[in-house]
Length: 140
Image 1 (cartoon, one colour):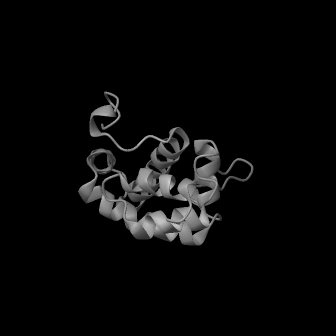
Image 2 (cartoon, helix red, strand yellow; image 1 turned 120 degrees about the vertical axis):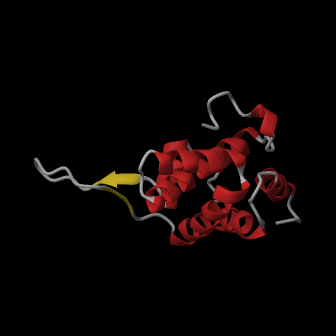
């Protein structure tokens, strides 16, 4: 990755985010090379963290995540757990969901989805993480 300027730039943008380490960066670059070229809905579905309905007729089932790329989902799961402690944006988002009565696993999955959306936008715009650039209300 370090030999190519394109991959090196993508790695630098991803590593600028608090609680994004070498494992998540390598996993995203290797298993999700489309990062930064897709919309936020497409990238979370490709990673397997988009909620899909389990409805049939008049039965309204639960929304579950499935499919996608298992290696990316596993790396995002562990990284989201770290982010709930180290990343101020994800931490406040997770705490707000837990205080609203959501299950912790559901809140963690929502953090995975939010984090992947943020990383996708950063790679797309080639903008490194800046804490002061967070819009008002985004951290809540």
